[in-house]
Image (cartoon, rainbow, N blue to C red):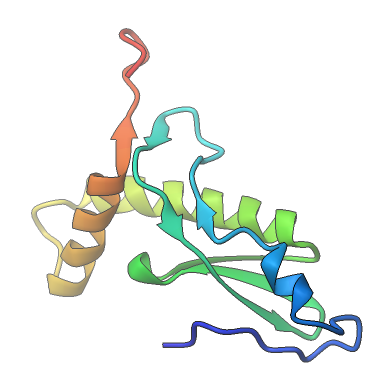
Length: 115
């Protein structure tokens, strides 16, 4: 598994750029879910596109900026949760492992009770 940084763009001139990138996702763009344990994030840049990955759940987001990549990743995490939840009880071993991780790290917000 890759946990580093690929500098394939001439604009990325120093390792200082790595320090400025978020290392975790601690909120989502879906009001139905709350992050209770952050997801670690690794980064890659390919041809000027930022790729943020949450390796423990095999989800990623991409964008022209780090913020866009994180937003895409936040949406991917929420989509993964709801899709896996729909098939809970019928998941294979690998998908069950991912489902177990997202259910441990996320709380479903009850619209009637606030959480």
